Length: 407
Ligand SMILES: Cc1cc2nc3c(=O)[nH]c(=O)nc-3n(C[C@H](O)[C@H](O)[C@H](O)COP(=O)(O)OP(=O)(O)OC[C@H]3O[C@@H](n4cnc5c(N)ncnc54)[C@H](O)[C@@H]3O)c2cc1C
Image (cartoon, rainbow, N blue to C red):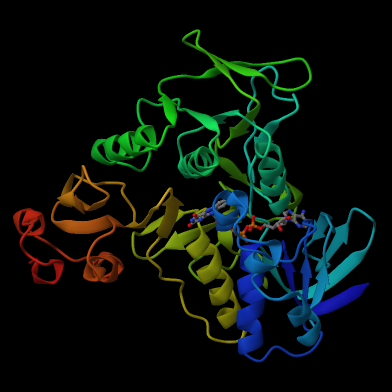
């Protein structure tokens, strides 16, 4: 059996950043092993629906650490290696090829997987989901000869993919179940802005539609919708959510509820076993609630935090949830938690690509969206959310008052 002090199970974003941080903190040779079902070294996932999908980034551009770095640091990295059995009492993992790995400390970083459509025809060729580098490469290769694409799902993955395909001059239809895009996160004002922006760039958005069937013999050639509309297409990309990868931990004694349950130190209920990133349901000390975050910054920060905790700095993970997205020529950021908001305030002009939205619970700031606004707005948003700042609605809504002067 191979044994190491630390094992990271899952070679995604958490693994890349956790390894980097461990090295910074003095990792010894041979102390870390990463085991990954993926066939690529840990990479940044956001470019898969942006620059990499568009053909601007190459594979080497999106690696978190250069290929040679792992050997230089004497980190064992096992790609294309699927862990099938986990025995936390014996402190060992077994792979599908029967190999065993022992550990003192385990970081579970198995991430999430894309949810699949359950409509008839979902096994046709040219129906894609987007999670891995391979998925992105396949979509990109097929998009090269596509004339029409149907993108299913009005969340951030659907919106980003639709924006990349439209910029490749592919006739793109975005199919949304709800009555507006990303209704789970966006206010009606924000959805309206983005819908108009997409329409002005040639994306057709069909709302309040569910997929009844995917049509075609071998390859998909149309999506049949609940209203009776048929969307003709050469390819379908579905961005209909993700689910945490937890099934191999079912009989291990770990508490699992919407992910692997960890406390504010990212510790599970089993000694020396941690979880981080998309798979971890952690205790958020700012909002006093349990949450699981499927975003880049959470994976980076929790990976780094785990490294500090296991190197002896046992501090709570206290972090404002954060998300960013790039679509067409726009970039935006969002901090905080919208739940419990009693009102929102817009600064700037929500009919233009330069505005921010501020969510208040009573007079406490709980979340903010910022796009093309003065730098102080993106600097103060996370600070004020973390410090539970109280603000007057009128003062915040005063367009002539810089944010730093809002009381
Ligand atoms: C297309 C796309 C675009 C995104 N864009 C943004 C964005 O713009 N902004 C943003 O904030 N966030 C974005 N995200 C989210 C962000 O990338 C994720 O939150 C992040 O990748 C989570 O990191 P992770 O390490 O937890 O999981 P992952 O990066 O998914 O890594 C999980 C790893 O575990 C491995 N694994 C799973 N099970 C096993 C097993 N049994 N044995 C061995 N290995 C296993 C997998 O192969 C994989 O390597 C995007 C995600 C995707 C998919």
